Each structure stands twice: as structure tokens, then as C-alpha cells.
Amino acid sequence: MALGLTLYDVLGIPKDATTDGVRKAYKTKALETHPDKLEPTASARERRAAEGKFRNVCDAFQVLSDPTKRKAYDDRIQRAQSNQKAWDQERERRNKEREEWARQSKERSEARMRARAEFYQNIRKIKEQKEMHAKLVDQFYQELRDRNPEWEIRRQEVLQRKEMREKGQIPKRHTSR
Image (tube, rainbow, N blue to C red; front, side):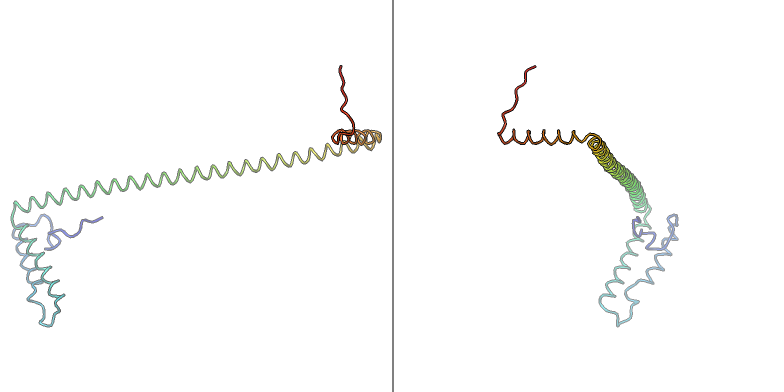
């Protein structure tokens, strides 16, 4: 991020320009930007803009032509640039931290989604195994009943007695062994 125009930029000179170089650049810029150079048909807005540019040129010359003011200005610019550099470094560090946090967050989210998918897949497998086991057990009992028809008769009798007991028609047997 740039700090904006410096007084050197206003006059169009390098930072190591001599006092004579500053004076020559001032004269050239003053002639270019002087509001009296505008045509008589210039609007008030154009005049205010030209006066502002000319004022900036004069202010730049006033500071840069005096060695004490120029030194103080250079120090302020240098501090501002170092502060800007520190801010840029801090911003970069924070951006990297945010990117790393986002990457880790995405990885954690994807890991949770994979774990969830595995969990549900395991549940499906367990249900399928249960159903298969139940079918095998039913098939086994059916084969037993087919080989021993009296088992089905006994089962029906037990179910009838149980039903009658639940309705209260037959008292529960007490067996003491």
C-alpha cells in the first residue's frame, strides 16, 4: 500500500536532489501550475483545482528548500514508510494465519465428514448382517419345522397357553425345584 504523493513527487525530483535542483524544479512546476495560466473561460472548479496544485508546489518548495525542514520531513517519511512496512508485514502475517486456520478448519471438516460417512456405512453393514443373520435363523427354524412337524404343533400350543395366561384364563404355574 503506497503512502501517497510525497513532496518530492509534487516537484518531480529524486530524494537526493540538491538545493539548486529543488529550486529549478519549483520554478518549472510553478510556471506549469500557476492559476493565472488558465484561460479566462475556466470554471471556478478548475480555478480552485489549479490553486490547490500551485499551493502544493509552493508548500513542497518551502519544506524542501530549507535543510532543517527537509531533514525533519525526510525523517517523518522514513518513519511512515517503516511503519507502513511493519503494518504490511503484520497484515501479511495475519493473512497467512487466516489462510492456515481456514485450511485446518477445512481439513477437520472433511475428516469429520469422512468419519461420519464411515460410521453410516458401518451401520448399514451391521443392518445388512443382522438381516442376513435373521434370514439364516428363520431358514434354519423352517428347516427344523419341516423335518419335525410336531415342533410347530408344540410351538402353537405354547403360544395359545401364553395368550390365555395373559388374558387371565389360565393361572400361572408355580414350579418349585
